[in-house]
Length: 180
Image 1: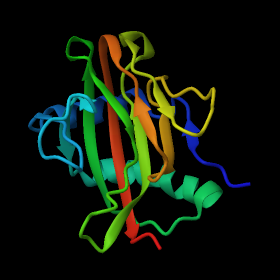
Image 2: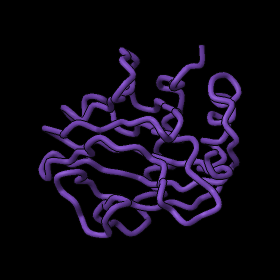
Image 3: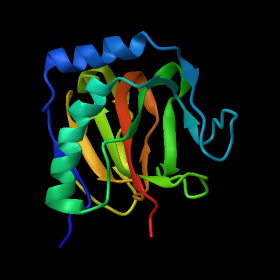
């Protein structure tokens, strides 16, 4: 039976985590939007984002994507990614309701195939903000700092509201030929 996600708990080092955060914080901050609207849609998503285009970050994630793809997914995917540093602040009611990451109505010759979530905050830095899959029940540890979670981009998931503190994560979407 094919696995629906792969997770490496606390795999990234403190040095790697700090380098990702420092790189992200040097980028302009934006209010997060969704595919369906260029405007902020607060009932669906509240967070701040910063786009990253650093090849070293993509290469760091790619080694986990390759392994997860080999061990579990067998999806046609390339080392071509969009990456986004995300902060969910309790003061704003930070959350992201149910969604999947494939832009089905996109006009590109490629699709998001594999999604990556990297936990950059310590689990004690915030309350709430749990990551959940819609149809996959799990007791896996997604909260430990430095954890890398990888799954096919078509799986529905969400981030519950952060009720205190701030949750930081790096998300990435690796592309491949259009879904058939």
